[in-house]
Image (cartoon, rainbow, N blue to C red; front, side, top):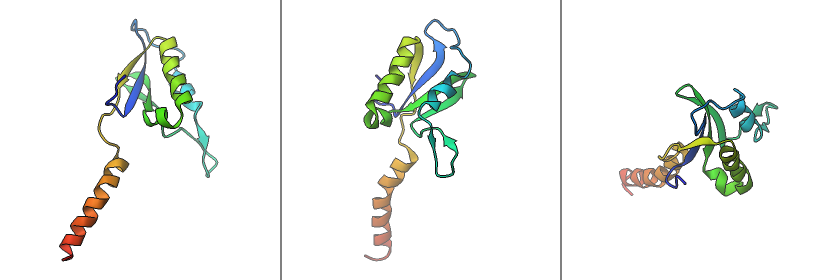
Length: 117
C-alpha cells in the first residue's frame, strides 16, 4: 500500500466521513511511542507525528518505522483498519537528510575539481 510514499497519513475521519473521536486520539496514539530525551522532556518519536490537515486531526507515520519496528507499524495499520480510518500517502520526495547524504559525495568531488585536483 502506497509503496512510493515515504509516509502514510492516518486521517481522523472514518470511511463513512465521520470525525474520529476522542478529539485527542492523534496525540494519544503518538504518545504511545514517545520517549524521554536527555533534557528529561517527553518528545514524540521521529517516526510518528500528530498533525492537522484541512482541519482534520491526522497521524503521519514514517514508512521507516515499518523496517525498524514492524510490530509497531502493524499495530498502527491495525488501529486504522479496526477503526475504519482513512489512509492516504504522505510525502513522496526524499527527506532533507537523505538529500544531504547524497549531495555530500557530489559536493566533495566538485570541491576537489575546483581546487585543481
